Image (cartoon, rainbow, N blue to C red):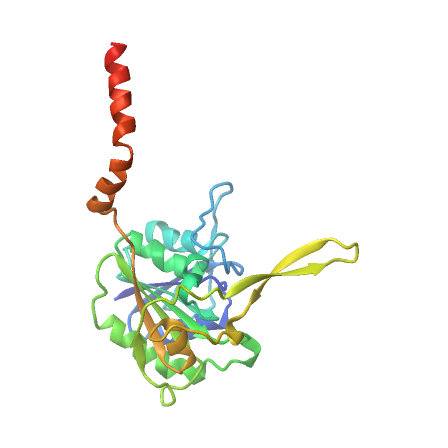
Length: 268
């Protein structure tokens, strides 16, 4: 199995090293990651300056790796179209420092890497860890848990047009309470602007992450399960254009189009 690995924390992130260490036991691994942190860039791509992929020898000899001066979506796109001789069978993105839950999916570069793969028809997994400070982390603590979750995913077929958003509690396999396949809790507003004054009396705003203070969480959804010590997995579908919705919206403009047809007929 050919596995492409990317992330948004950058090529030197400890979470990336931990993921590569696990995945090289499950297949042949290639790595294409941003050359610096790209958290919160969502699904942006680089349009206004050239992209460069620099080979790096920072993993075992059988793992080819490139540092890309672009976004996570750029990295996956480059990996699939340019860097790998053959298309990957599976793309992993992570391990992200901090969970990606609920609305986070629309901001996260980690998620964007998985989405980009899915747009190519290649199954993808985004992996995130419910921890926030690399200095306090021991990735060996979660290594066996990551391995077993990844192994189960690799042994099965992810359905077309969706990716798996996986969030891991910072705990050992033995202390993990299990796996919950759960919906996104989109009711949670995790990030909120906080106003502050500069020395000149001007107000500026900073996004505050309220994850640690969240308490009113939807029963059965991802935020609460992760908080309770479960691995959460959310299958996220890349929606196609539904004919029913196309016809429904088309009805809104039926009268407008009839007027245009009449005008064209009258002038010809």
